[in-house]
Amino acid sequence: MSYQSNGSFPTPPYCEQVAFHRRELSIILSLYGRMVAAGEWRDYGISTLRDLAVFSVFRRTAENPLYRIEKRPKLRNRQGQYAVVGMDGQILKRGNDLGTVLRVLERKLIRAVD
Image 1 (cartoon, rainbow, N blue to C red):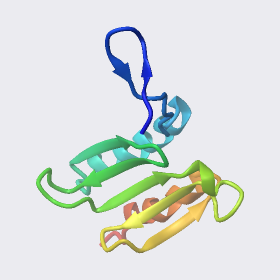
Image 2: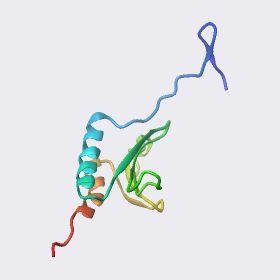
Image 3: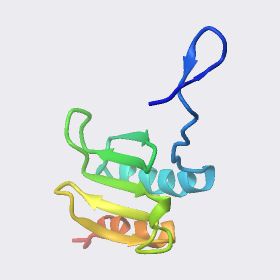
Image 4: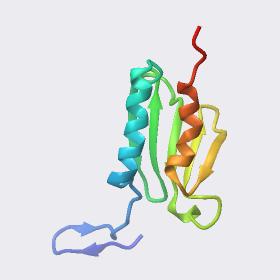
Protein backbone atom coordinates (compact mmCIF):
# COMPACT_ATOMS: atom_id res chain seq x y z
CA MET A 1 0.00 0.00 0.00
CA SER A 2 1.46 3.33 -0.97
CA TYR A 3 0.85 6.45 1.05
CA GLN A 4 1.30 10.06 0.08
CA SER A 5 3.11 12.28 2.51
CA ASN A 6 1.86 15.71 3.54
CA GLY A 7 5.00 16.55 5.46
CA SER A 8 5.00 14.87 8.85
CA PHE A 9 2.27 12.21 8.57
CA PRO A 10 1.61 9.78 5.72
CA THR A 11 -1.97 9.98 4.47
CA PRO A 12 -3.78 7.16 2.70
CA PRO A 13 -4.79 7.86 -0.89
CA TYR A 14 -8.23 9.43 -1.26
CA CYS A 15 -10.87 6.75 -1.56
CA GLU A 16 -14.40 7.69 -2.42
CA GLN A 17 -17.28 6.22 -0.43
CA VAL A 18 -20.75 5.51 -1.72
CA ALA A 19 -23.47 7.39 0.16
CA PHE A 20 -27.17 8.09 -0.18
CA HIS A 21 -27.98 11.55 -1.55
CA ARG A 22 -30.51 13.84 0.12
CA ARG A 23 -33.31 12.92 -2.32
CA GLU A 24 -32.69 9.20 -1.78
CA LEU A 25 -32.67 9.59 2.00
CA SER A 26 -35.89 11.57 1.81
CA ILE A 27 -37.62 8.69 0.01
CA ILE A 28 -36.21 6.08 2.41
CA LEU A 29 -37.01 8.09 5.56
CA SER A 30 -40.55 8.72 4.35
CA LEU A 31 -41.13 4.95 4.18
CA TYR A 32 -39.29 4.50 7.50
CA GLY A 33 -41.61 7.01 9.22
CA ARG A 34 -44.71 5.23 7.96
CA MET A 35 -43.37 1.86 9.12
CA VAL A 36 -42.50 3.25 12.57
CA ALA A 37 -46.01 4.70 12.85
CA ALA A 38 -47.41 1.26 11.97
CA GLY A 39 -45.27 -0.31 14.71
CA GLU A 40 -43.25 -2.45 12.29
CA TRP A 41 -39.83 -0.82 12.59
CA ARG A 42 -38.07 0.79 15.56
CA ASP A 43 -34.48 1.66 14.60
CA TYR A 44 -32.18 2.13 11.63
CA GLY A 45 -28.50 2.34 10.78
CA ILE A 46 -26.60 3.75 7.82
CA SER A 47 -23.27 2.42 6.56
CA THR A 48 -21.16 4.02 3.84
CA LEU A 49 -18.50 1.81 2.31
CA ARG A 50 -16.28 2.01 -0.75
CA ASP A 51 -18.58 -0.04 -3.03
CA LEU A 52 -21.99 0.38 -1.42
CA ALA A 53 -24.17 2.32 0.98
CA VAL A 54 -26.57 0.45 3.25
CA PHE A 55 -29.67 1.62 5.14
CA SER A 56 -30.55 -1.14 7.63
CA VAL A 57 -33.89 -1.29 9.45
CA PHE A 58 -34.46 -3.07 12.74
CA ARG A 59 -37.41 -4.16 14.82
CA ARG A 60 -35.23 -3.94 17.94
CA THR A 61 -31.80 -2.37 18.26
CA ALA A 62 -29.94 -5.52 19.34
CA GLU A 63 -31.19 -7.68 16.46
CA ASN A 64 -29.98 -8.34 12.97
CA PRO A 65 -31.59 -6.02 10.44
CA LEU A 66 -35.02 -6.97 9.10
CA TYR A 67 -34.19 -5.41 5.74
CA ARG A 68 -31.24 -3.72 4.09
CA ILE A 69 -31.70 -1.10 1.41
CA GLU A 70 -28.48 -1.14 -0.60
CA LYS A 71 -27.06 1.25 -3.17
CA ARG A 72 -24.36 -0.17 -5.46
CA PRO A 73 -23.59 2.33 -8.25
CA LYS A 74 -21.41 -0.20 -10.11
CA LEU A 75 -24.54 -2.26 -10.85
CA ARG A 76 -26.37 0.74 -12.39
CA ASN A 77 -26.03 -0.60 -15.94
CA ARG A 78 -26.73 -4.23 -15.01
CA GLN A 79 -29.41 -5.29 -12.50
CA GLY A 80 -29.89 -1.82 -11.04
CA GLN A 81 -28.10 0.11 -8.33
CA TYR A 82 -30.77 -0.24 -5.60
CA ALA A 83 -31.74 -3.46 -3.85
CA VAL A 84 -33.88 -4.51 -0.90
CA VAL A 85 -32.33 -7.48 0.89
CA GLY A 86 -34.24 -9.58 3.43
CA MET A 87 -33.04 -10.84 6.80
CA ASP A 88 -31.90 -14.11 5.23
CA GLY A 89 -29.83 -12.36 2.53
CA GLN A 90 -32.35 -12.94 -0.25
CA ILE A 91 -32.74 -10.04 -2.68
CA LEU A 92 -36.43 -9.10 -2.63
CA LYS A 93 -36.31 -6.42 -5.33
CA ARG A 94 -33.65 -4.74 -7.47
CA GLY A 95 -33.77 -1.84 -9.90
CA ASN A 96 -32.64 1.67 -10.84
CA ASP A 97 -35.67 3.53 -9.44
CA LEU A 98 -35.54 3.69 -5.64
CA GLY A 99 -39.28 4.35 -5.25
CA THR A 100 -40.16 1.29 -7.31
CA VAL A 101 -37.71 -0.91 -5.42
CA LEU A 102 -39.10 0.20 -2.05
CA ARG A 103 -42.66 -0.76 -3.02
CA VAL A 104 -41.85 -4.32 -1.99
CA LEU A 105 -41.66 -3.00 1.60
CA GLU A 106 -44.74 -0.77 1.32
CA ARG A 107 -46.86 -3.87 0.75
CA LYS A 108 -46.16 -4.73 4.38
CA LEU A 109 -48.27 -1.66 5.37
CA ILE A 110 -51.35 -2.93 3.56
CA ARG A 111 -53.33 -5.18 5.89
CA ALA A 112 -56.85 -6.52 5.87
CA VAL A 113 -59.17 -4.61 8.16
CA ASP A 114 -61.44 -6.74 10.32
